[in-house]
Length: 137
Image 1: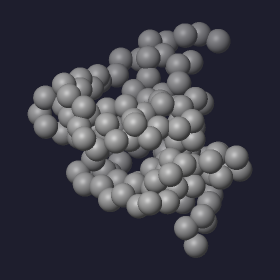
Image 2: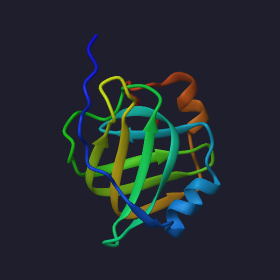
Image 3: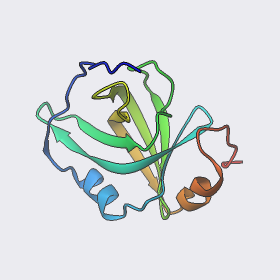
Image 4: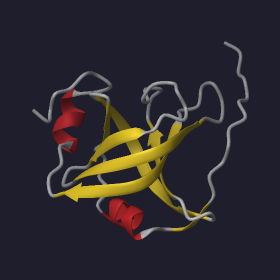
């Protein structure tokens, strides 16, 4: 299989936001993102504020499964860790990839968020990976 270098935009974070810092502090190995009824697992979370003041969250995938291929799709996402659930109001997203074989990084530009004292990360990680879920019913 041929290897292709794919040019992708970069995100430069100039400082950690309080919100992203709290996500990093409670980070577990069970990071699940739910969008349009599908759950996706991620291995790491990072982000902060950009120079223009945007709050960004970067999620690195451990596989090639990420929410649809429309790179700038806005919407409401749920981010689950073991202890919390966050509703993220995303106004833009980018998919960063260094090469065709490289795992993608999902960049979410967050306008607003809500936090809840429950999380399904561990339970979801055990049984759901990029499949339809009705965990919220």
